[in-house]
Length: 248
Length: 202
Image 1 (cartoon, each protein chain N blue to C red):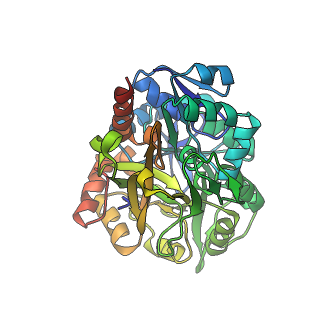
Image 2 (cartoon, chains in turn brown, cyan):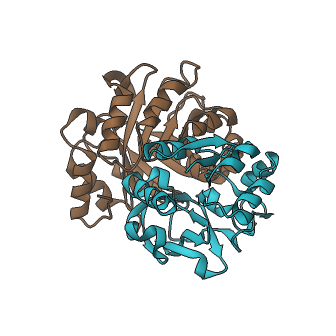
Image 3 (cartoon, rainbow over the protein chains, first blue to last red):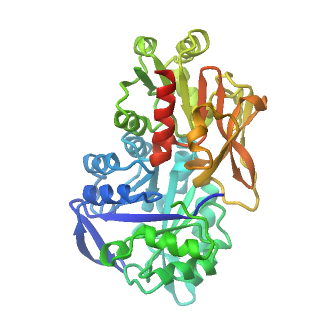
């Protein structure tokens, strides 16, 4: 049986790991290579590493640092930040990335997703969808200047060939006060590819609630691992109690 | 046992090398025909689409040297993920095209209306051919694929994985061993499998 996945997310500013709250106030939380080493020893299911300032600062991911992070990992790694071309993806796969995470470029032009998916296979193209609530709607936060609902955007990128979606709640980011269950349920209605739910995990009950109230198969988290004593294993153990398949 | 990791522009050569280095197995990442001929074993890794994979093998003119080293000289061969699928007679990803044709069968899209596609994550395998896989029966391995290898001769299947129904997880036939999952990304289970294979051939 396919196991649910617990995925630590490392967000990077070009120099150090940072953790934001509602996408603001990045706070330094350590060194990416050391963090990757610890997570590898803890046998996490996957690791995500995203340079969250690369697009904003018009630069590419630092391949040397990414390579050092990947070197620590005998589990799958997804890398994101500043990806705009087939060459960018090739560079990351060549140094051992298993998946790439694309956000802005998928908003600018979904034909890039189609091209990337046909070239590398859909399974290595993960699209990050950052969602915020506006009035009664779920909207996609972006710097590409597009006003698009989450639902329309998910349909668009699935059509283009996305292999996986990272659904990130902007409102819940870094708050550690529970997942946006309504958002995840809404997204699940139309999502046909694997989805990683992100934003709001702060204690073990939040994860139990997430997996009981949704069909979630993968969860990504950062704050709970940076700021509490809980480890990915603690989360897996509490999911095992509610009969979710986990890899221990 | 010097292993040539075939570099044909289809992804994760670095991950495979990292696993072999960890196991202290001499290896070289290459698409050079002479270096492939000089190797004792061959690994065909791969991430990506079937058509692109075959196009790239042809671009580097790798088909003749692989056919000679694996089918005629019978060197130990391992294929992972796309590197397993390319052994098929035919692929159907993006467009129909011929594969290496070493293992008769067709690579088809996974059709599971109730399931998310790709089949992505850790799943346990059921071993049907014990040789290399005895130590890892029922262990979790990392899968990431939207297409599966429908093998004609079920005797070639070495392990299966369940995702709605049973799909081929590993193939073993003579000197050819290949997995749909990524042993190089499957932490202890993957390293155990690889080290077992190298011990067998040592």
